[in-house]
Each structure stands twice: as C-alpha cells, then as structure tokens.
Image (cartoon, rainbow, N blue to C red):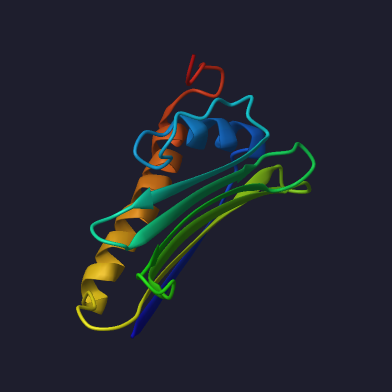
Amino acid sequence: MVEVTLKAKITHPIPKARLVEAFLGAGGFFPYNLLPAVTNADIQEAIFIEGRQRRTVRHTVKAQDQQPFLYNHSTVDRDELGGISKEISHEVKITALPLEGGSVCKYAGRYFTVGPGDIPEEEMMRSMRGKASVMFDAIEAYLEVPSDAVLFE
C-alpha cells in the first residue's frame, strides 16, 4: 500500500474571476471543455476495465461568484469484490483576497494504491507534479497577457 500527497499554493495579484477564466480555458488540465459560464457541474462516469474491475471517474466544478472556485477530479478503481485498488484525486481551489484584490490558488493531489504491483512513489510524484505544473503554467501564461485582452472566445 502506498499513499502520496502533494500540495502547492500560490498567491498572486490576479483577480479570482480572471483567473477562473484562465483555468477554464487551459488545455490539458480539465478533461472536458468547460465554459466560463459553468457555475456548477458534477459529472460521474463508470468505466469497466478488463475482467470485472470497475473505474469511477468524477469531476466536480463549483464556481459561484461569492464562493471559492473549486475543481475536483477523482478516479477510483475497484477490484471484482468491490474493494478499492487505486484512488487518485486532484483538487484546485481559487479564493479571492478582497483586501489585496488578488487571489490564492491551492492544488492538492492524492494517490493511493493497495496490493501488489504498486507504482513507485517517485513515479506518482512525477505525475502529480505534472498536473500541478499545467495549473501553474496557466497562471504564468495569464500574467504575460495584457489585462484588457480577451483570453478565450
């Protein structure tokens, strides 16, 4: 059994609304093309893999104006008896800083495996760092765009 958790946090002067717009348009981070107008979504898929193993994938987006933007993606693999054999989750939370005018972006990734054939911890960390780097690359790309430019149409 292996459990690895990676957390990252960045504070920046970008207002929450503009940062959420940048994330929704960032390719490679969100598995679906989500529109900036999306305020709530909860998508759940059940996928059957070789034999009797099952995979459940869930995507949750919460983007109300007065609350933090929240994106959560989790995957759970179950064996033929229904026991969890692997669980992966990624969560992004963007909170406005009303006094400073910017926002705080937090990323948390969790990888959990049970039983033989565990993936080495270094490989799991590399995968989670890859997801986090896509998120932070979107922030850096946004910082290079003039504030009056339209990012996505």
